[in-house]
Image: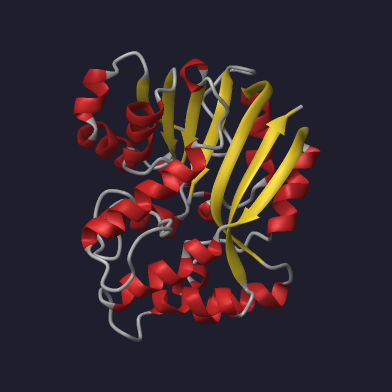
Length: 270
């Protein structure tokens, strides 16, 4: 993967800055977390990691049984802890984790060295992008992405690539934050949230993505808001982790104002 093709803010954030080291994430996972069942009175770093693991479990449970027969890939794997969790807890036949950033793939292989040794023929980390997945046609039973699609410059090619690599009947599961439609929404998010202002995150309206999926040949496209189990818990943890005026505290405001929400999307290849 040509490093020059990675958007500059993505290249920096997941390269030299190594976002996983930020206190707001409390570990190698890099997602906002699924906080259902976690006591928010005084959440600890261990609770924060648990929330991130739970988000992966929420996604992985969307794949049908028997999971032991399913060949999966993850798009935007970061440090790769979610792919290792998928094998350890869900016993998928194989998981190949893909990321556009070579530094992240290097970290994933190092951090998950024990898992790679335990599953030498079932776990792999490799370079690839959402618009150019490194898999043959019809070669996968499932494809998933956890809080990465907000970084993709556009989602039409991702939908097309997902349809290409999945076998007929294969399932795509995506979770991240999507925006309400309208240019004015994108502009308001740039004012509220630095990640939208500097181009790290891209305003992708939910309806546009579901239209892309249908256009690529996916059927039974379903969307579910899981925002109530993401935003309040995240903000409660941030309250004890970042300065009061830090821009990340505005995610809760953006959700309450209807500018964005966190969704779980499933779609089956026709």
